[in-house]
Length: 405
Figure 1 (spheres, rainbow, N blue to C red):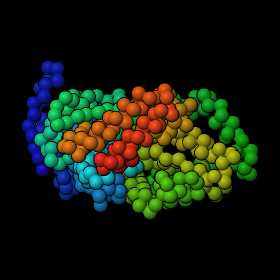
Figure 2: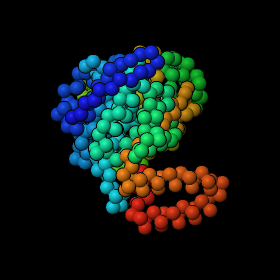
Figure 3: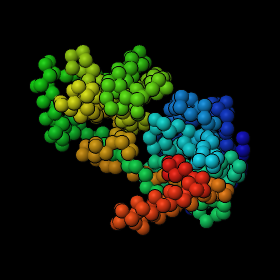
Figure 4: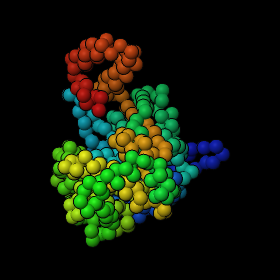
């Protein structure tokens, strides 16, 4: 563990902050109560940065190949920020490097650190200073999908910009649709004629019509996960992404659903034709936000658009409730853009601690971006130049596929 003392001046406010780096889960676990309390003081509450989500995700997907790299920030002993990261050894061909990235990324969306309101800038600055104080523990920091509406991340960039041996890069990342949940079902339905027509068509075409059931209690949620996974396993996602891709994923979702159901933080909606489940949705709740995370349908019913209908009915579940925003997955939900009221844009940030081998990876990425920009109006020439550079990169031992990742 490491502690540092730092005084940062933001405007006329001076805060005495301390940062601590935790490498063992046995040191992270005692933070659970404080972690959950911090969630209530954060201006942006996200289920993906809660203790339960981070713990379940890391244990199921990342424990065997990584260790925690959790940095806490305190103001006179009071927890004001948690930066939940993990550290893993990665390779670009023969180049070994230590990568730090969010604690859980496999089934997460926009994994932002938890920071108490008013501490955004000073906490990012203290986080950067902690990284500088531990240069032997990391080579590359990669943080994807940081929402642009949030303050403070620019302090991270400024802290490393122009300082040897570091370099920092930021790029536009995926965006996600945002839905206004402070409206009635009638108001929502009136804006979406195709959805209304789809509901009428499916009830006319399928004998007996369809009905929608939402599961949310501890007693029924684990079974609902299996119902969802069974539908998903019939479609294109099977074995590739989502809940049913393998047993590790199924086990993760069973455990996560059971844990979240205790606090009414998960709901699973299923569209039935008679007793046959034909489409399903999964969403998490946190503060005034609903995180719509998964949707699937039985391809045998694709001609009646069951996915569109179950998504519509699932949205209905959260209207006229205590929720304000529906947050859809960044990068995977563009098809819902016609239903959205806004978009959340994001930025990905890389910080390189440039020893010579890591400098080669950084050079590759910079050159790839330069090539794309220089020859963007000449695709054929762009392809030839890129092919030549790939061959050159491999001569120097750079696996370009991993370097791009």
